[in-house]
Length: 600
Image 1 (cartoon, helix red, strand yellow):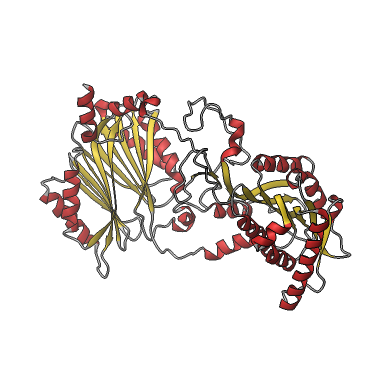
Image 2 (cartoon, rainbow, N blue to C red):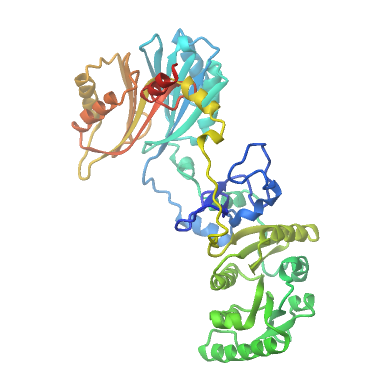
């Protein structure tokens, strides 16, 4: 539910292990309605013979997660909390390469950075800087919402930034753009690392909904609350169900079998029957207003006898359309009859189409969709699809559920139906969900897998990038948690850090602590070879951003081992990455053997 749109693909000649499949997710691309672009990339698995317009052939499931009812949004609102039960932060790692602005002296860069922060509404509470190995400078700037660190290599025209925010998360990109502008870099690359936060931060209330991946349902509810919501009042009916049915005939019609329309109580309007005039009508049983067991059994016998008579005179049933007037209890009767595989084989033709129209409240509509899902599961094996459609206009909303069996072209036909309904009515049609059946196994004769070797692809761009990297140091990010039933203070942390650096023979040239940022503090410890920015959330979490010009793992391993021996903490997470130029992703020890082998 993180993404607005998801689609699951089922590809031929790919081994199925425990029903593994390829699933795509996107916040902006609606896989059902979006026509993909052909980027003229050589395709191996799909092959050049697969036309881009045939994309639906590999679709198995689809879901749109931002179609919410007021009840769903109310539930999300009730589950939200105004209690600060934890602190979270995000570290944005930014590499600014080929800078055009001189990076020395650092004082000029520092003034430009402070001015950039102020233009974004960020007040610098403290800053510190120190010369570093190789003629560069390390600087750190702390503000209420987080901190920014900068490491410069003037001769290489390179600056490594870290933007760690525990408040104002939406500012990450604007801060990054401002930093790149200050140093004059058009070649900035970045990625995010989940980091520590700060309890008691003043921005917590406005930031709490941005922490972590936000549910697509929550996004939808927020959008709905910010705009005029579509009325879902049942007293204001949409365009007639007949209009919807007429445009849906492409899916409903089959070449075999009898068409059956299930209507509400006899004598009341049944729009579905009016549209499908040649169909046979099954009226809802009398006295079926409640789920009384005697009435249900009596109704089931009546319906079974009637369906058997229809089959004996007109043939098995190939299409069933349920009018919006049919109560859920009547669907329960139908489900009881069709729940038996024997009865399904006896009464229903192949292929089968099942359509249910709905204009009820949310609970009843969900029960009707669940009824259709039981039909899908009873049919079980692909190709079988169950779709949920939401049809809305300024007057209100209704829904339609569809089950289609033995229909290889269901997805493109469904797309045509939704387009036709919108073209001939004032309805906006959204497909909420499409579910397929049990994966169809390929026979041994049909199974024709293809194997691809590395040399089948052009790897020269990757090799060029790999050999063009220039690692300049190792960044290690540690997230520590205070051990259970233990307490820790600011003094404990600072003394442990100083003792650890001393044990490693690292001289501290600059040390500064900022406490006006919440319940905890942020400490910068700078030396020519190694730097650390340490964040304590004020309760139990410590986040350490360690950098060393030596990119071997030995230094960071020694640092964390010594530190954890001095304070009662446990390691929660550790992230390691190189910093340098050439869009670096590898440490020097990774690149050296390849360079030697290639003769570079």
